[in-house]
Length: 242
Image 1 (tube, rainbow, N blue to C red):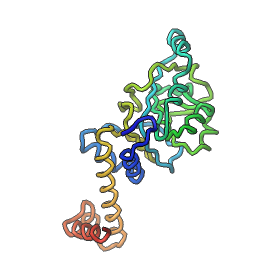
Image 2: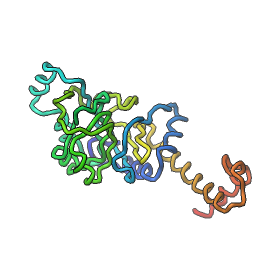
Image 3: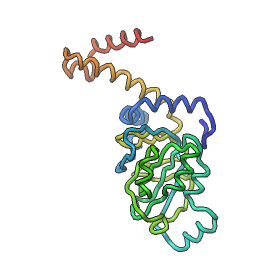
C-alpha cells in the first residue's frame, strides 16, 4: 500500500470497505487476529457523524525544555509544519502529546494547509487550538482537550514518523486508522485487507439479524448467536443478493 498520498488501488479499495464498517466489527477481527488492544481510549470525537479512514503520520511531543526547544528551532521548522508538508491525501496525524492538555499542538492556520493537502483526520492524545473554527472544517478529529495556548507553553516536538503511544495504544507510521462516533481503532497495515473484508462480512450478517428481530417472530436467543435455521436463512438471503 502507498504512503503519503500516492495513489494505490488496493489501498483505496481497503479504505472504501472500512468506511462501511464500525469500529466494533473491525475490533472483533483485530482481536481474533491477535491485536485486542488497538482501540484508542479517552479521546473525544469532534465530528462524531463523520467516518475517518486513513494512514498514520506520527508526531511525538514531550514536556518543554529549553535545550529541546533550541534543537527544534535549529531544524528550521516546527514539528507540526514538517508533518503537514509531508502529508498527502488519506493521511491522519497521530500525535503523542503525553496527555498534555495545557497547550495545543496545532491551530487553524497550519491545519488549513493539512486540509488542502488532503488530510483525512487528527488523533491527538493531547490538545488542539482554535476549536471554534476547526469544528467548521468537517475534518474528523479525536482529541483529549482544547486550549488557547500554543505548543511552546507546555510541549516541544521531538519525533516525526516513529512509533508512538496514543491513548495507551502503540501506533506505527503507516498503520490504518478507523474512526467513528465511538473512537479510533488502529489497524496494523499487514492485516488491513483481512480486517476490512471480515468486518464487512460481520456487518452484513448483523444487518440481516437485526432485520430478523424486527419481524418480531423470533427470540434473541434464536437470533443472536444465530441458530442453525437462522444461519440457513442467511445463506439463502446471500444467494438471492448475488
